[in-house]
Length: 123
Image 1 (cartoon, rainbow, N blue to C red):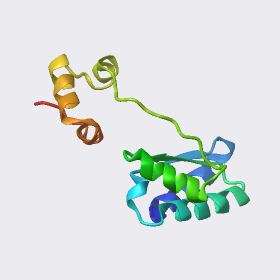
Image 2: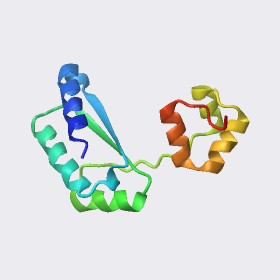
Image 3: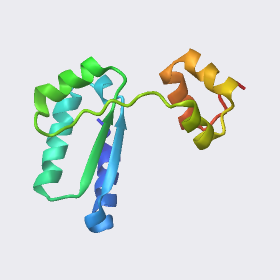
């Protein structure tokens, strides 16, 4: 699971000193055994006092929570992230109301794909 990315994040964290680094892993629950892999890597970094913070993102809350409860007890905090508001989309990406409504009809996975691609939704 994201082995190369985790290794790159470790290098960045070491180079950043006390400031550390953040590694974001999207849809981690889709990888078989993800929670055990994260636990092992997290424990290695904690033991080495590596200032790396990990953010796990997922769109299947039940699967994410199951994995967290299984092997990551005491190592996590669940934050519920609502959809982007129209004001946030307009400010960050210059979306019109028509584009925002188009994204809302298509659903959050479409919105994320558009934002990652930096495309213009609904055009």
